[in-house]
Image (cartoon, rainbow, N blue to C red; front, side, top):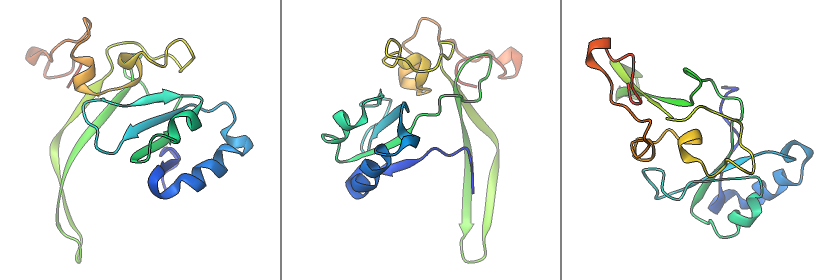
Length: 151
């Protein structure tokens, strides 16, 4: 059990469960992130505090509670890509590649509010979103990959 994984629903299969959750006190004031099932490169992702306005139209979507107090690197949100090869499930055999990837937002993180939920470079770590920012910079090989927006 991982305590850092946000509550998540697949709307097509779990719309009733999502509605029930929204009617609890635990959901009051929460921010949600909607991710289209067939999306990529940050397209179609919506961050909102009024989830039912989007949920009714978003059948093929995953929705999660937005983590409003994420871990940060140099004040920025990040995600990590770890590459794993599973060679057997029956007799579990897993190999983890020695290298991975860290993607960082190009803007300093601030908690979502009505005035900043549309600022993708604050809230989304997608390379395709952040590479368009003036603050995006390529990893400097001289630093051994310890700087840059994608490390």
